[in-house]
Length: 569
Image: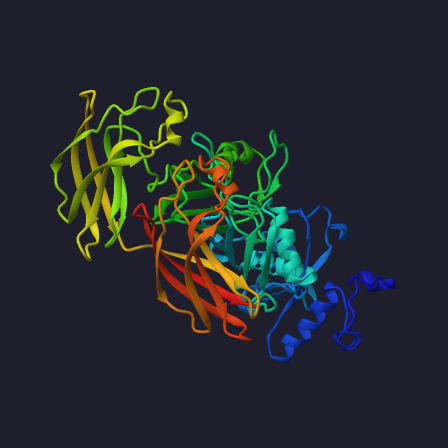
């Protein structure tokens, strides 16, 4: 605090007085710390500095340019600010780097300069994991680790969380990010002044995820970070036609977002990777799909050598910074889900994911008149047999899947004659396989089709559930419907890991579906349908954590493993 009494504006109190009063301003804190260092035989010098946006000192000298005091330790060539209570030792406030200073020793004073920032010394790493359930429910965790001046930013954010309370702060932060919901923060070591500092948070969003219709794009939430995303903050905001220098910081911002989608949902289509290199900064982003997880990585490294950047730099970096802004705030298109029944007649190569030891429907082949009447069954000729599995074809009925711009789109609501093509991998096989077919339709047209098949172990999807003590909870309701809302059949559920502190049960029955509005089966949500419910009931009086792992095989052949982390409260 600043206590201005008589000469107290420019003359510090002695160390004993500061210690006795238990308060003081910056010069008082410097005096006290200098005395403590001297007691350990460590020399130090008071330093006068401007703690603002002034990066030069005026001529002639005047006290008007000096508004703060810090310390210099000659033996270690190190500056430290005793008032920076949320900084690790030797870390200055952002406004104190690359500044001209007046350094004072016994009987003399001299001009000096605080060090400029180095990117490796000031880092922040944000890791977010998101789970999107079959019903669109979004849960996740965000962890931020900072060091140097950016570590101090993380600690300041932690202090705000502490002020509001972790749950209220989480709600405010999610609302501010335009993804309202509930959550809480774990402040970890944010109360200490040792780098690195880490704050964790978990959250559940209010709005459910809805895959966009074909041709449209959707936002993927980026979690609950407390600090700016890559490309923001370090180089300030953009201003066209700058005429004066602007403040700029060196540092390293990294962001990883892993979004895992339930097998019933379509997957995002990865964006094109972006790399930008210029003398001032570098930026790199990558996007890839691994199993049911969409992985986004971004990193921004500011390498400015001074903390006051010339106005001409604005024009040099403006277009690159705009490209970063677009990349960081990207929206995403989504692919047609692999398990959708009734693929349209097409040619070329198709990629499929098969679960080990499970039968997969590769294709449903049909040929219809405009009035939806079937022209007959296609003839399937095997050109290349699978090397690591079996191929089977069956005549029967199914639902077509014409696009909205096709005059036969209305046929999608009724069953039609067709040929189903199935693939079943050999027992225990994992790896690539392929099939090539000639399909001759009743009209006589020939379609050459090749299927590249990737046989993988059933993916484990991580899900989190909360249950009240002594209450039974339905972990999941599993269903598979045709476009006319009729059930394809019941999923098969095998419990792989039973809970240690409760009981799990699997029951065939009825329930309500939760298709998004853009799904042709959205109207099915209005009435009950056949399905399988997975229930969990904790032991009497138990509170704490538990877990269940199940293997699920849907009637159309798609398989998945799901691990439920259960919090009993």
